[in-house]
Length: 89
Image (cartoon, rainbow, N blue to C red; front, side, top):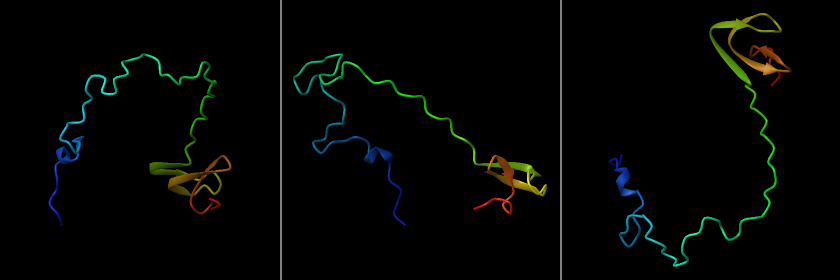
């Protein structure tokens, strides 16, 4: 197995030996607070749909909502928390 390497060996050193930090206006264009290609009106973005948990785990187990068997891990199936035997895979 090869010897572990330090992250410093991979951290931003260019081929010319520069450490990756930018120098003052390297392109000579000066600084601007607004990008040149910025659109005048930005379309509104809808809020994302919240994620739904598809499985639960309970240390002592919980009853399956279909067969009432006790299971530590239950999956969501048509709105019910069910054991692996009742889950339609």
